[in-house]
Length: 422
Length: 189
Image 1 (cartoon, helix red, strand yellow):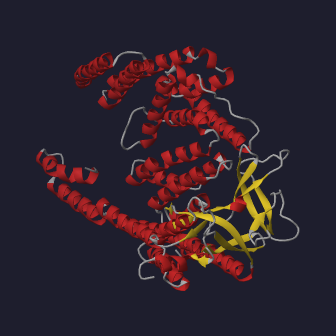
Image 2 (cartoon, each protein chain N blue to C red):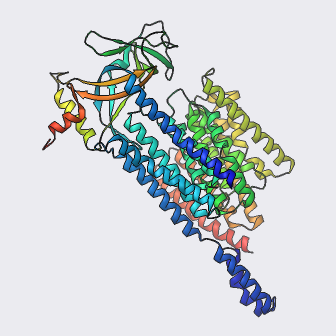
Image 3 (cartoon, rainbow over the protein chains, first blue to last red):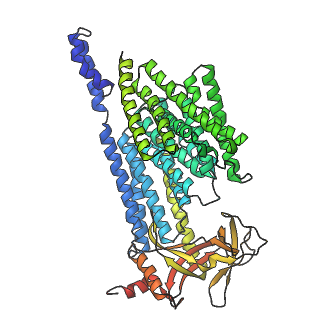
């Protein structure tokens, strides 16, 4: 329940308790009731936008059928008519109903889909080759201005997915991680504006939920030898999100940046707790343009991680500063080559995960927040289970270990709940 | 408001200009380009956006390369077109620059196999067909070229080339346009 609705529900109790008089209560009721009526329901917006998206995708599928029997002119008209319709809808939104979120989002997403369909049909008529990368990039760039003209966040997400698709379908040898970053930078002003208006609004949360993983995947797919450099990118991204000022580790529905950061840092540290992880060949072939771009990108993010990490240390925010550890250890691995001494970094990672879990648990108890405390517990449990998978134990022993950890989790949770609520 | 509408008008123009330019270039190539026949074998796959097509595996996309030359996967090069005695097009060894004379195609190096043969990606690799006809085209081709009688029904694509830009005009199986052949083999065709 949001603020105004909660307040309206509380009014009778407040009046009864004598906190406000009846005249004030009535004025508040009138004020907030009119606000709630004027605000469009989220469900209505979602269904309208979903409808436009489905119709747009339907147009693409109809085009994909290949209407061989139709003359070329008719096929082109059939493909371009939805585009014209979408563009007219965009103009109408700007002209008349510019405050309607549902109309703005729907018109933009439908136009984006109609453009993709028109371009697909031209490709079909002239039998263009299967350059999916160019197709996705063209469609995304053509839709991008609509994001800003109509403040269309769903179209921004579709552009981001298009960029990620482009990065994934670039032919071998054409990887450009810096270009992938630049493409996502084109969406940044939209996110920033939404963040400035309300950093916890549905729009901002929705954008962050989609754009952050899309950016992560796009750069990952653009990295040459992404299997090797991917972990480094993963660790750096996680550290960066974890180290953002004001961030608290843990999974919070309305704070996707912190959630993604926590997951990434925990995942890299847990992966690093296996000795096999450090025995891989981490070094890439130098000299390739894509490799150079990758090092520039990873170096820049490392600089940001170091800057934020040092700031956290100066502020004595130890838990926040700990987020940088896996990324720094991976860089150290690149510099010193741990392949022949894989036990040490793996041991460090084990200690780190255990320490981090305990630190989060302690922070949760101190702040009396079960969600954070549970995060710490989950991390410790994950480490224990990882070690059981790592060892050469029988299924029976592993099964008993799972049960033991599960029971321990329940008991710890029960105990924690009492401590937090005490 | 007016400024936003003006920007929207420019965006709309750009959204029409992209496919418009592609249509104009395609039409001009079909009208004025030189026609070549490229030997091929059709296979039926699916494009998520553009639907069914027959993927074309061109004979000209593979050619022997001298041992001294270094080719890198993903490298973009230019290959001059020549015509064999049997009337089919073939590509000369790709170079870093287009030839000064004659038609050429921009190609991308895919790989070089153990025998030293170079595999190229051509700027045309598919022929779109109705979703029911595309698998049928592959079947007709395969039935006509069973083991023991290869090339009984040769397939080739007619490609128009103009200033390095190529448009696939028609796909033929045994000298007949693929749609006509499919109509002939279909019940009631």
